[in-house]
Image 1: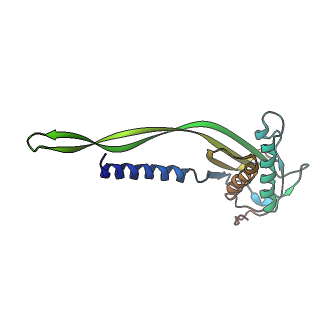
Image 2: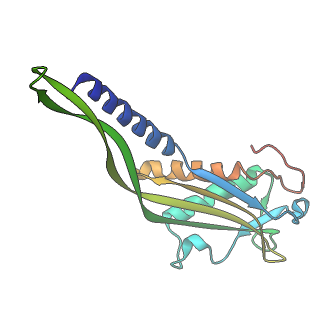
Length: 199
């Protein structure tokens, strides 16, 4: 392979690697709000029962850490935890699914032939596509805020991202970070309908 072909191949591989690295930097976070909801009336919260993240009927270490992270975010915004008469129910859900990415990368290669007239070899470039298949696990974390009196969803935040291997001691920090990313999209403080900068 000629130096030009090697340089072109390396450039294409580097571009593909940077593209994949950019996608893996953090979760994609979206949110949605009920425009008719009066957020000025919400001051207290509790967790919805049964919590979607505890679909098996019992709490896990992950669900407990996620609840702690959501409670910390709500309390940082001035909401008071009240199991008896909450204004908002907080519901949490998380799930994972296997995904596949198929990446087609153009490559250049060369065929060589000998010209008897010129008495030398010539390089003829040709293009082809290389197909790479990447399997990965995608995780989704939902935070729903439900008006307790009307039993109606008023705000939802969703984080979607690739799930990598995590050491047990790092898992809690990653859960905290994902929940904090979601709550960055929640602009309200307790008892205020005006949007505010998240803490």
